[in-house]
Length: 90
Image (cartoon, rainbow, N blue to C red; front, side, top):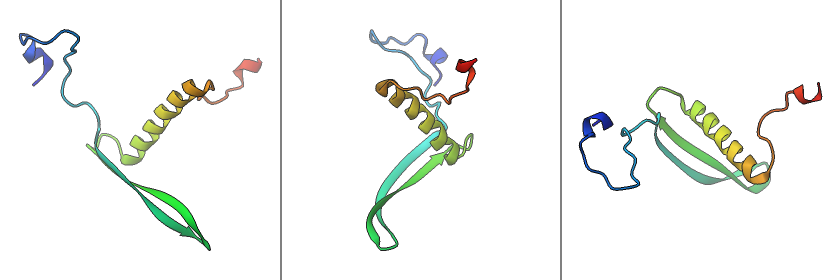
């Protein structure tokens, strides 16, 4: 049901009405498996299962979420996640 159809419903204070689902990602699961590279056996790999609604591919979902995480982590670290353009030197 859309928020417009629920306009007369009473809600508690500090609640925001939203439409139900707006994410193209339906489900995500991951697992960590041991992997062997040559003679070295103490490596791990992450296997991700990503299901989308078809609007974007799983690869695009990973790329977009990685970019968002990098921006958030750069705020914590005080660094810039934006690529250098060289415009500052002009």
